[in-house]
Image 1 (cartoon, helix red, strand yellow):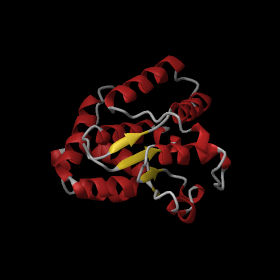
Image 2 (cartoon, helix red, strand yellow):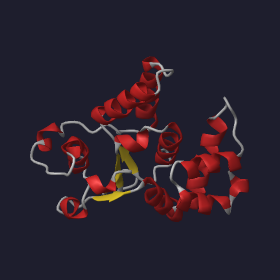
Image 3 (cartoon, one colour):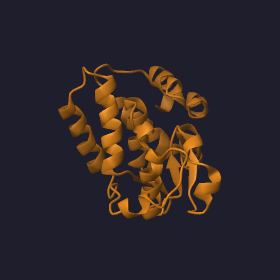
Image 4 (tube, helix red, strand yellow):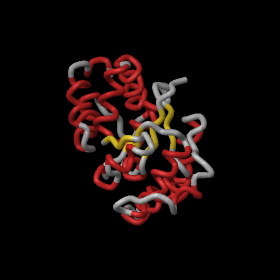
Length: 189
């Protein structure tokens, strides 16, 4: 099992294609993926608010599947740290608290400005965009990464996607660095 730990912020779990990619790559055990029930509550609450056609029961099932797919993913007993933390957006303190509690190396977030480098440095944590994070993972083990993407594509049945279509979705999710590398090996996906 890898020693590198990443906490996923709710904003990267909100969009289904990105969430699925992050969880798929987490199952390769190149790193330990972590989140909390509070992070789950945040992203699912926002999906339900913005997508009324999605049922709460479907999201509850997604949460269950995520927790089953990634061993030891839930961070607990971090709440006591929250009030002592100072971030530009106080609502993000629970994410940093979970990172500290789990001894995470990185917080994967689209809200980099909400996790200032100077603040995170004292906890030996770094914030990275999903594209930067996934790009590094690809570089560490292209074979495992490609296998995770291929398995993700094969799970998508309604509708089915070609590898090129899936890469276009990833690109639209803000993953240009990752997509550029995957385009070179699209036949393996």
